[in-house]
Length: 210
Image (cartoon, rainbow, N blue to C red; front, side):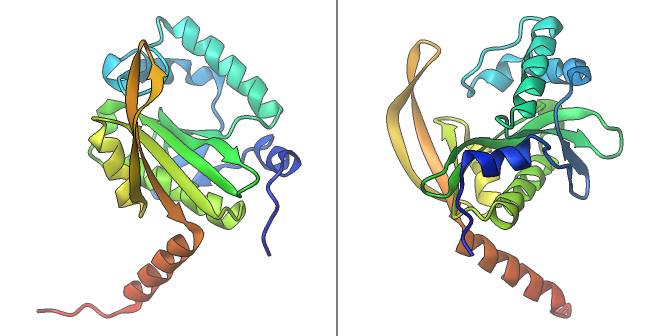
């Protein structure tokens, strides 16, 4: 059965955004007391270089942003999770849906990670959980992700999660005083389900020593 995406459907889910867990991470709603952890990376130019927002000037700005986020959660109009380490509870980034295309049963996913935690496979781990939620809980047909020219690390995350490169839109976004070239990757529901089935089948196979 295809679920018809609408505001009421999204509100019922995201006004009480569920906690998701992976092997190493907890994906949960953001909180005002995450301000120090978020500011730790939101203040860095190497983080915001390929994002649409600027560095946070101080932790007070981060705290005000998180207050705004809490209000958006209550209204069911914010679709992003905090990424926290299960072992310590420290928030190290965010991952979730940036927008929904209700008519076409599609969504776009976005993510940010504290650079101190790069190279450990944590972001693909988080994105895979969001894709799972999108396809199995929201019954989406298509999920896309975009990255700015030069942000090869972001594209690698998408490809590790099974997303396929679809094309480039030259100088399609005016951001921070200049035009940015943006590329798109995407994955369809059937592709996701097929990949999961293949993985499950492979895990049943005995180890073959060559």
